[in-house]
Length: 278
Image (tube, rainbow, N blue to C red; front, top):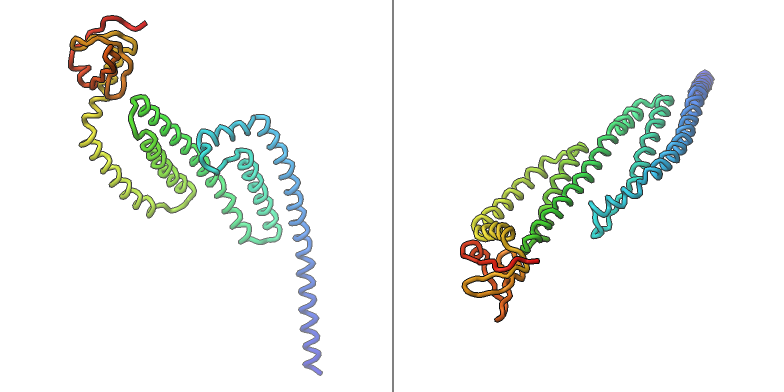
């Protein structure tokens, strides 16, 4: 009987303690739920106001410009400025109220870890912004290189400009990953070796194989200052009209046909301009 009595007392004590713990936890649970509900309402209101502000400042225009200038139409990847900003703000507010609710529930570990995530989000957002700006710069340099090559009528403009774009994009990607806190030591070491060997090979091949080509390009630049399409000239007792000034040649239309003169001869030999172009 004594054992049964002690069991009853132990069971009663356990139930009473559980009841007290539940009664103590109920206000905290209610408080946490109220905080989350209040946070949900505040987040909805804030996002609604922010959406109208983004519409007022024409964020869609920036989205279109970003996709055209940076990502281009050749990729299915699209970037929506409004959505990114709204989602970022929404998650920031949600985590703030989640930390408050965790504090009310006295969940210190949850509050601490969510706080760490909240402190990391601005770093992640800055990494994304750095990546997008870097892509814009890479695309701008790509177009500039292609424009220079096209102006001299050189082949390989698309290949070289695209190659430069991807090299810059890779550098920007690694930088953005570093900003986001990702360890990129292995990536950088391997990429440095590969890129260094590749650049060295290109530099040697260009230095040995295109020395004369570079000279001709410089000669063409000089020749275009002295001669113009439409001028009537006399070259070695042959009269004609300049039809084109290419990267490596000058084309002269004569009565017998088209005379193509290498650009180095245009600079080195005597050409008489008999009539200027109109």
